[in-house]
Image (cartoon, rainbow, N blue to C red; front, top):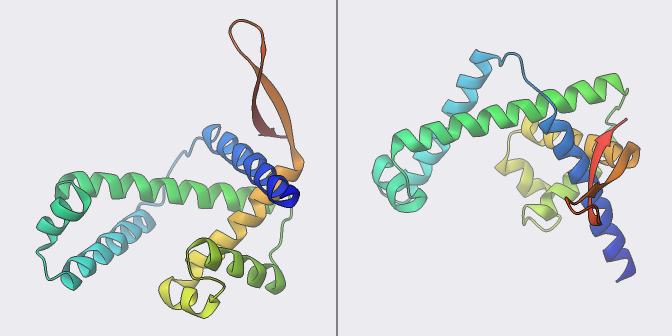
Length: 173
């Protein structure tokens, strides 16, 4: 129980630091070719889902996603930009802080990713379901988040009536 509480706290600190870094990061320019490639891949995946359900793509989006094709495309564009931003931030921090991912680190992260995605610890099934580069990106992001959690400075927020709050926000140093 104590370990579970510590794990929850550690995850909270890491996530808080990561969110703070992301919110303080402005992307100047996205690689339009890469963005379009990712958008098309995601849309293609949903077209495959529609096919598996034996449904027209637009009907699938309306019934399963609750949105029109235009709304879905806007959502995909935003999600792709968010993913690209996270990948750019991950790479920038890893480069600046000389964070390297060994094969051992990668395999450890794959097991954790498999578990969090509902694959138990079945890394082979995870590898079949996702592109290798996506898994490498996710693994490196986890390692960078862990580094941020260990190296961030936590600052207690103050509420408007000057009582201290139990919330804390994080920023990297």
